[in-house]
Image 1: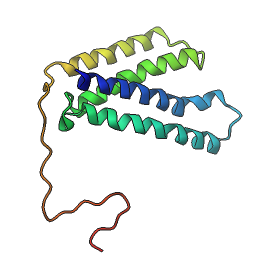
Image 2 (image 1 turned 120 degrees about the horizontal axis):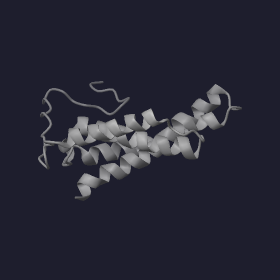
Image 3 (image 1 turned 90 degrees about the vertical axis):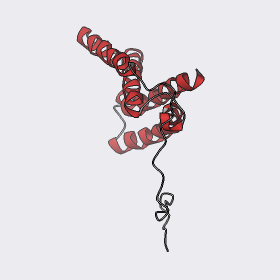
Amino acid sequence: MMRALAPFGFLFASNVFMTWAWYGHLKRASWSIPLAIAVSWCIALPEYMLQVPGNRLGHISQGGPYTAPQLKIIQEAITIGVFIGFAILVLGERPRPNEYIAFALIVAAVVIAMWGRPGHGVVTPPAASSTVQSAPCGAISGA
C-alpha cells in the first residue's frame, strides 16, 4: 500500500517546487530575466530530488505498481491541481470554468490510465550486455 501511495506524496511535493520555479518569478516583475532563471534553477533542484525518487518508487521496474505512462498521467493531474492552488493563492488569478472542466478531464485521464494497470508485478529490465560498460555522467570509460 505504501509503495502505491508514496509516489503521490513525492510527486505532489516536487510539483510545489516546480510550480514555484516556473511561475513564482511572475510576482517579481522587477527581477531581470537572468536573475529569474537563476532563482528558478535553484528552486528546481529540490524538485528533481523529490521527483526522481517518486517515479522510481512508483515504477514497476523498481517494484512499484505503476507503468511510466501511468506515472506521467498522475504527475500531470497533480501538476494541474498544484497550479490551480498556486494561481489562486499566490498570483491571485481564478481559473475560468472551462479550465476547471479541462482539469476534470485530466483527472478522468488518470482514472482511465489506472484501469487494467499491471498490478504489483515487476517488469525486469533487459540484461546489460557483458561487452558494454556503463559509466557515470562525465566519466570516461575505456581510457
